[in-house]
Length: 456
Ligand SMILES: Cc1ncc(COP(=O)(O)O)c(C=O)c1O
Figure (cartoon, rainbow, N blue to C red):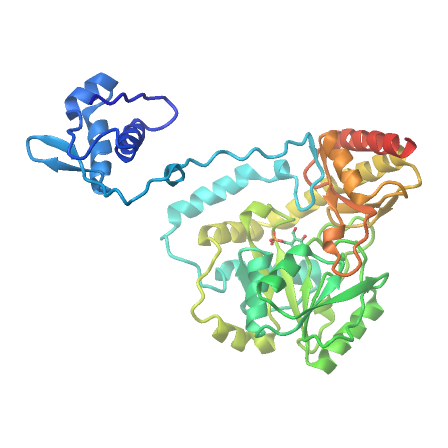
């Protein structure tokens, strides 16, 4: 039986020939031992090279759909009847249609258009040409650890040795390693808090205690926790800055309870009023604090580079725990970042971004104040890349998000960040990614639709 093969331009030709013959065999349209068209003939018929047909036949033969007989050609193999073929076996994955938004206030995004691509590209090409292809040590590239330690000393007043710095591929992978190192100790986490931290604790099935946050930051735990996850410089998501009194109380608590604190200093570079908030690690004289830093906010989240500063007294055990660990961060990326920092470009890039984000933040707050009126409260605008808006009575979180979505504006819910008492009257707006014009337009759109809803 002559098989009709139809070729399109969307896929490689050999793949199409292979798939159509394979399907005909599985559908029994080509019976066992039927001869496949001669390679030359099929090639002429389809206007492709003999090589293309040969590749398709070899693939079919390699997978057992046909066999070849010398000087005679290719023949369909016998495939047992009880082997049931389902359409799903060769199903192609359809492209998921994602919700399309005109304006994106989604949290966790940065202004990627301001990234120094040209410069990075140049450093990257140089690094590639010099790379010998080997991995970085699991702790991270030494030159990079030196740069991070220097940066922390200068920018965050945190004195540490490069040997205390460990490079990971993002917050969660780092947190996972640390929780395992502490042998799955019972953990306390801010409530409300960072949902991706909570998800790591859940994956590890840790005993996890929500610790409430008040106007001074996370309260001192009464719960039996031995590890406490905190965001002292800019509480996530409320934006509270932890008071000095609370910092001292927490450090004393950790010392007394033989507990440790994870300080997640994720966005402290972007503070728009007053001096930078000192780190908790800076005050820690008893080796109780593990410092978490990231390049996701200052450079790009897509780089996937984060780092941990281990207290000196835990270093040896941590090294032992990770003896057979391999680095999960590209050595090339690490060396590029190290060179970028060494040239002094990291700090100037942060300064440039701080100015940019301050402008966006002012624009967002001004637009919200102008369009929304006093029933809406704006919280946590002094630092970071997001703000929270408290909604007035009559408009809850899910309705506000739904109405914004209908206008093509994406905003985030706050309730998933709460563990115990979930409020339903707050939403979050990230201003890292949108332009000033988009911010103004986005606020205008949501303000109109929210006001209309409230007045009906
Ligand atoms: C609270 C918090 N911690 C840490 C991070 C860094 O996460 P990652 O290193 O996975 O990009 C973020 C980034 O959005 C964050 O919001």
